[in-house]
Every structure is written in structure tokens, then in C-alpha cells.
Image (cartoon, rainbow, N blue to C red; front, side, top):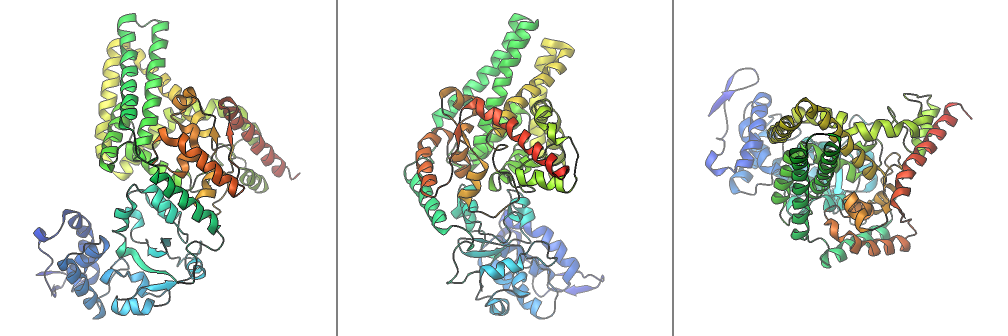
Length: 543
């Protein structure tokens, strides 16, 4: 089989690429771009090396895949230049370029991986270094994600946020089936921690980490991670009934002010409750199988709400792994352009003489900017921006059904006033969503990432609101924000059962567990914004 080299010459490959019928569909999809790139860069042996790289990257353990990987390694040793992402024998080229005890043996024979210390990992992944490696640790195994992070299904920023860190708890918490996911990571592994090294960074509290993992195992054994399907079906039914009531009110009672307002209230409630439900589906907490969670989330988010489920998951997962961490949590991205968040960050802005807004008055303009305008403005712009940037065409096609249904019904009932009805609907949903979602985060610690353990990271960034039937329904059980952040895939109807166990662990390690009334939680948003603004002003005036 012949193909054109980088200089246009015809060269003979050392062996044919695997026949299509022997290759899994997923492998063909990944190998195609690798094949084209390899042909351009390497000349002889490029095609076989591409198939070998794809086989190793996907963890395809077939005999033909391993053979192509060995053939690609052989050609590389004969002088064919391979890109860094080539994976001969499941050992990445990053290892061959040096790093870790035993890296030389791994590069030459692919039989042994490196042994690393936390000090070495810290030096090789130092922020600001132009030659910075992209290594992270999961269950004491060291992985190089340089050539994978941009294809990570949960988004590239999640992996980049954990570079140089122990990501074990984040990995197991954010994956519904971490065992299955880990089986695909062998091609990314470059070594493991030395036997005398701790499993997490020496700066972290080992006892707290062990206690949290024991708590997670206990909660799993208690069955608190198992969903009640009937509970969620009732939620979906009441969402559909509320939307039906909204349209029937306009149909049978007319379009005067009173039925117009009643219909708006019904539809707003339906939309916000649908938002809480799709949030649960996005965390795989409704159905035992991931694919059913994904399918129903697409139905609720795309068809009932008119948003992109992939857009939501992309941003929300980033928020969960690094909550209230500036530049890593998208929920605090309004700092510093609209608001000054966090005590230290506000002082830093003042010292730097940064003033995009009059932050000392932010507690006054917060209520008229963020709550009513987040969804009408940012939701529409950023939603479609990400859809077209990431090419989420299926999500876009599904969203069309919402807009067609909404405007077809509302136009026949309200005429041109349907535009006003839509705008008011989005503003009311936005207000409800912002006050509920931010009451547990804005008053808490907002700062740069301090690389704390999972339990400490979540407790510093979240607080709870007192339980009641109304609070549970009104907030979609996000009044248990602490338990939700510690165990995102836990069904929401089990939060109250896990709360006493979390409180006992907090008491053991002297960590504050905050719980407050609902109205006080709303008021604390404004109080904390005023405090941040005053700190900024003092630093700005050099007092």
C-alpha cells in the first residue's frame, strides 16, 4: 500500500493498515484523524503507527491492535519521527522524553513504567513553565493527559484544573462507573507513585481523606446512591401538568391580566422544576444506567426547557470539581467585570487599582442585574455560542422543538404579546434560579484554588438551608448543597439521610457545617456582596 509522504514522494509502507471489519467503530473514528496527521508528518510507517496510536489510546486489547502498536514503535526506532501523542506499547512519548525513575526502561522496551515522587510531579507540572507536563494522579497511578484532555467528554478544563494533583476523589465522584472509565486509561499511564510516597500530596490531611472515602463506602453500602424511580416520575408528571395548566388557563380564561399572570406563574414553576430535574439527570442520579439519564436529560433540557444539555454539563461539571475557585469555576466568572467576589480577591482588586464597576455598591445593583438577566441574556448568547463552537448539532435540533411548540401555542393565544410573555417567563425563571443557586456559594469562601482535599474544598464553598417540604420543593433539594457537592450522583431524596453522617465527620475534624434559614440565606448574598465591596474600597483608597 503506498501513499504520499511529506515531500510528495511515493513510499511503501512496511505493512498494511488493519482491515475495517476487524476494527471497532469507536477505534475507526479516533484513528481517522490520527491516520491523516501521521501520513503528513512521518512518511514511511505512518499509517501503521497511526493505527497503533489509536489502538493504544483507546485501550483496544485486540491482537491486531497490539501488533500495529509494536510495528509503529519499531518504525520509530528506525528514524521515523513520531508526534508526541504516539503511544507505542501503551507508553506515551512524554515518558520517552524523560521523567521519573524507570522512564528510560519504559521508553526502550515498554515493559516498565516510571516511579514518581510528589516533588518531581510538582516540578514537572509547575504553572507558568513553558515545558509544563500535564500529569495527574488517580489511585496512585500517574497519567499524562496532554493529548487527551481536549477530547475529555466532561470538558478539557476539568482535567487542566487537576494538573499536578491527586484527582482520585474527583475521578470517582464525577464518574458514575469509575471502574469502566478507568479501564480506558491504560494508554495514558506513564507510571505510578513510589512505594514510600503518600497517596495524596503531603500538604493534604491524610486522615480526613481516608475518613471521607470510608464515609463514601458506608453511604454506598446503605443504598443511598440508589434512586427511587417513582419519585422522579412524579416530578416529571407534575412538571408536565403545570405546563398544561398554563396553556389551558389562557385558552379557557382569556388573555386579560389575571389569567395572563396565572399562566405565567404556572409556566415559570414548570420551567424551574424542569431545571432541577435535568440537573439530577445530568448527575446520573435518576436512573441506574447512564444512557437513560442522558436521554431523559436531553428530553427535559432540550425539549421542555429549550437549552442544550451538553452545554449545561460542560459548565456545571467544572463548577463541581473546583467550586468557588477563581478562574476554574465558571460560576464566579463575573469577577471582576461585574462583581467583586471573595475577601482576598476583592482586596487584590483594590490594591491593583482595578475598577470595572463601583463594587462598593454591588449589593444594590446585584438584584437588578444578575437575577433577572442571567437567563434572558447570558443563557441565550452563551448557549448558542457553545453549540456552534462545539458543533452540538443534535442539541440544536432538539431545542427547535421547544421554540416551535412555545411560539406556536403562545402566538395563537396571545398574538404578538407572546414575545412579552416569553421575556417575562425567562426573567422570572432566572430570578428563581439565581437566588437559589447562589445562596449557598456567594457568602462562602471564594479564592484561588488552594489544592485542598475533596471534602475540605466542598465544605469551604457550600452551605445548607434548613429542611422543610417547601424548601425541598422550592430549591429542588439544593438546600442540601453540602451533601450534593460531596456526592453529586446521590439521588436528591436521600440527602437528608446522609446529612447526619456528614455532620459527624465535620465535627470530628473541626470543620464548620453551616445551615441557615431560607430567608437568611437570601439576605447573606447581599450582606457578603456589601462586605466584599467595602474591602475593595478600603484597598482601592489605600486605607
